[in-house]
Image (cartoon, rainbow, N blue to C red; front, side, top):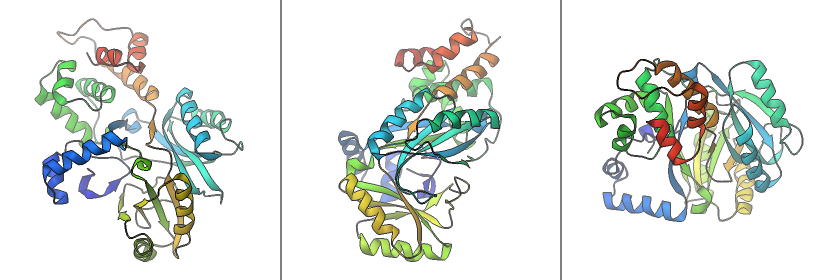
Length: 343
């Protein structure tokens, strides 16, 4: 599902078809459909969420980590982050932190409009930490958006982020354009890095851990991968793409990912300690609490402001709602309000 068959920080390509996946993995199309159905039934895969590139709005982003005590507190912090303005995404990690602390942390992505706002958000997030300490912020620069968005692009983007798993035909009807026009503009949003599709995956449902491994030198990567597969023959190492600049410890030339069997949270902890002991491994971390949580309010308000700024004077359009009303609709979480916003 990832472009080029390489696990990417910037997500999957939603345009790849089931027959294309079947060809890539050498199986029948029916087997791929069955696998997706199984993933959905057991709660491993639940469609996709869409991350809008903050650089579409001329804004960069940063990451920081909040130390927590156990996955339960991590899940609580994820819920509390929904009330913090400017939070873009967060997920729980287990492993050795940059400061040498072993345990869970919540890694948070923040919009970075300016230093003043980032510092204000950091002060708020410090109150969510079990120790009052934070690690970071680290620069987290997604690729630049390759062109400015047109008024129609903004309408298509609003429809897509509100209904990420709907068909192009249905979304085209909501926007009031043909499916061909809608697909053309959605493809431009994908190809020009305006949006990133992230699958909603919960690795614990497959009794697996998704590991991120950082080696001391690029020359150590091959030896660490070989030793990992020797210790865990069922593991699946994967190359990374887009990790440059994610944070100080990640570099595509020295890091890789792996899916490794782990039958419980305690097994994940033991797995991390064991893999960390492989010669050449510098830092090993694992997702421990389901998929990344994406927070839409900040992005939705930014999209709403641009729609409101560009929607006037278009023939055949319904009367324009006031800016505050439109922002409230875009930020609403109900399906009905999202569909109305897309209209």
